[in-house]
Length: 189
Length: 250
Length: 75
Image (cartoon, rainbow over all chains, first blue to last red; front, top):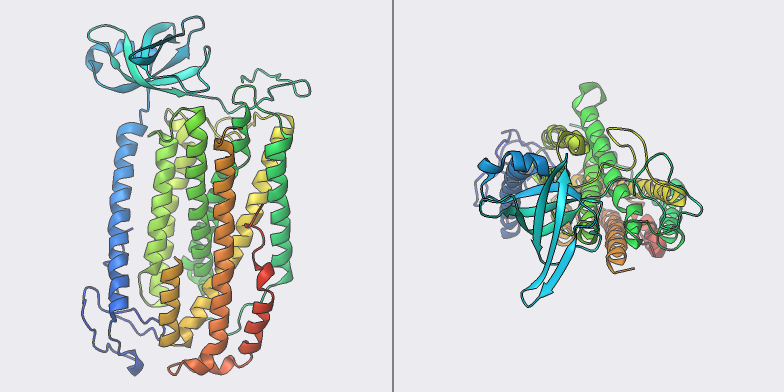
């Protein structure tokens, strides 16, 4: 997407006032072909070219950043609870995203002088991990739904300390008062 | 080299006006149904109402990039090469960038209350952000000065490269683990939809209405590009003024 | 509702509306300038001979300017 570098020497276009040799920042002298193409780059044009170069650099940097993010964060966006426990030793106390189903009956919200803490257990393929989240849970958090918690294992234990809960939801939408539309066919919430 | 046709595009063709009116009615109906008629979702409650605008934004962005890619291919193929395909590609990509930006923003606004985060580096979100930047790059590249056909060929090739990310975005929810749910409509895995009753019809209307909005915007962007090319032919003074104005507006 | 829904609709409709209005306005400006360009631009190319009728058309555009902003300018 850089593109700024490649130019053809042939600039006989009669309708491109900005065309000029690349990089010749100062007043361009008349190029070839049609005589009326003797152009002096005005400060305005030079500013425009500079702006285009800056835009190009910003975009290239942004593309690089996003590809980097894609390869580092997005490819393995989370580990399921059972995977995380299996990789417990290598994960150490590093920060990662852990996914699991919030087990009904395990959610406790503690409010004290230190703020709000939410404790619960997530489960994936039969493996359970106790999670303590600093801060309150998002609005749609509830037992029985899959969540992703962002944090790390505590010490050498299998307990997980998180500071962010992300609520996953499915791509199904069912009316809250389903007297007219019923959820058949096993679609969940 | 060929010069653009020297006939101004017709002032405001009736077809375009009808299209605009239809699109407007469709959007108003979508908003009315989406905000006031459809029921709340049993899990999301009223937040489900963002369903009627967010997926249509993403769909239109894909559509716009598809059109831009097709037009670029037609430009690159010598037998169909024509200036209007270059303008079509540019117009469609610009509208696509607007809709991609709206996809990101509306998704972010939806994600904050439902997921609990404005943004996550999830595969779908990351590749969509990349899509936005890639096509911004394409639009910037279009502005790099040069002889018409040099510029158009270079842009067309860039459009083909940028489009590679579109299938990646679409299949990312299947290829990688994602916080984002799989698409509700046109799911790459199941090709089924899981929306019930009036919610489904409102979503469908949203898709249709915003597609019409896209066509209207793209048609006007195309006409503008045509006028701008005509101005370039008109001469230096005019072209300079126009670029200055373009800089102010852009 | 809780602000998020409203914000989403406002951002989407507002952006599309603004973009649509801006496109229509730029189209109008470009058309008007093209209409007058034939006399204004001393370096004009051969194209200028083809434009004498444009002044009238440009003013016709202005008369209809009000309705120029159809779909995006939603509710």
